[in-house]
Image (cartoon, rainbow, N blue to C red; front, side, top):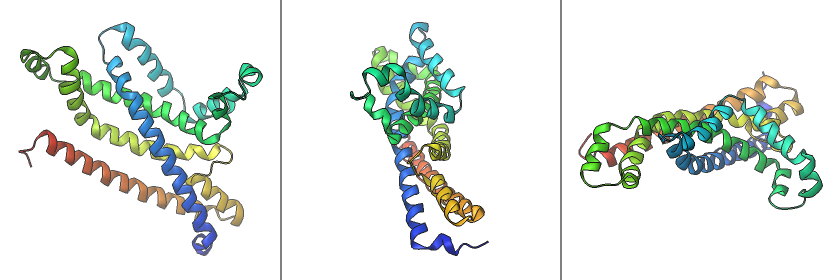
Length: 237
């Protein structure tokens, strides 16, 4: 194997651009997914079927279909709908569906939201009855109990599971390589392979970079867990 072509200035530039695109996709999708998942998680954990069932259906459909299919449906599907082409092809926000970054981030956001909703909702449902009863005995109403007792406690408990979702989402960003003109890390490896016809060198390098990013994320998540534990139990070790 010849790794000398990997360390040329041009190859390094392509890989660096791929890493930036991958991080952009990851950060945007996780941030938007977190914002959407909090209210949906509360609805999902509700005892009222009218509130929880629609959210359950959403998470069931998204988690039951491949992410690649979701990217294809949004990028190639929405903008090609006849009524979009005929009436709203040049009207905001439909014009955004012409952009590969928007479509990919939207697909990733929807996907990670579905998984995060189930993680947080499960933690909410697992809240100890004693915590709820103690809060109620202090005169807290349902909204105050949810915002100040149940939700903070659930978020602390679900952080390890959410950490796994973050890592899986990092790996899932490789799906973006199928979108034209969007060169993520996997797409960068494909570009190197197409130029030099060195598949092992190109994709092994990408794998090493993914591995380094994964270890960095694990370290950040563990630091966040320790920080939340110190806040929740200031007298602990």
